[in-house]
Image (cartoon, rainbow, N blue to C red; front, side, top):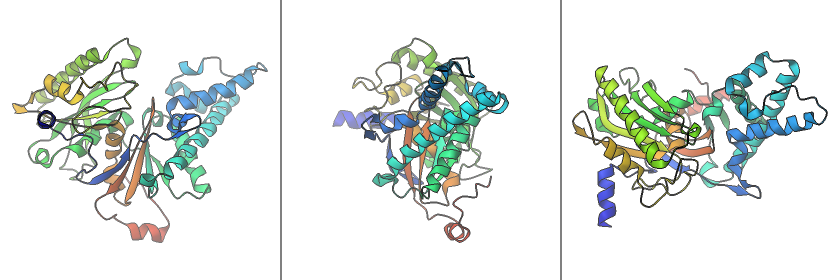
Length: 370
């Protein structure tokens, strides 16, 4: 017990906690199963490609597939081009895959809605890389319509920040209060199944005390999925990224807090270890002999002459937290992040929702004003 307490104190935890300053995290990293396996797999990014390939297989039987490139070789921009500028049959094929995927996404949300932490959810924010495309936006919007026509009163909205930035900006909501009194920026890390990103988040509290205007000042992305690498090499690469970001921010005159917020897939233990859910990362990040928080802190022991505090939470939780300022008109809300896997988290705001009476009067769940 003494060793565990020492580790927590050194790491700056506890980590992966439910009680945050403005919200209670009611659930995250839920693993719902059915006869086919994990339900969330039906709505991950690869599921869209599976639906498209199934449609193309039927068309190939008659030699009538209008797309000549393998589905997994088509990027987001190319998909959007096929949808908006392609031949009618190409666009129609993409639309058919969108419809099938939207049905799958709606199915997954219905299953989550049966769970106690999600039963009161009024709005779901959808993030992740898939959202950052016209195809993804249409799939999300179509799933929302399916749910509404089925009688589910849940809003489905795309995340406001670019998904790559949301995973960093959300870390500002993990930071202790003292940071906001003396510093104008902090360091954030977003570790995903395909990418690792490190950057500097400008708090911009002079523009919005609730962090609604916080933004990524600068970041660096490494796509580890494209390389043969292991856990230790990935950590070393992350260390170089952090060192570079902190130095550049200092040269630019930013007052960077001695704080690093880390988002990572999986179930995060209070001591900074990862219990499960990190299987898409390179190597074994769930080993009892590995602690990501301690590794980060060893690489960056000080920032600006002060001892570094590191706080880690699940990556979907942090991405959802970036949306918190615009979630103040509901009490219960959630996030789904569509990427290599399907991340999930649900929240309950600590303060009474603003404008609840107006929403009920007008019959609008969210005016989404910018």
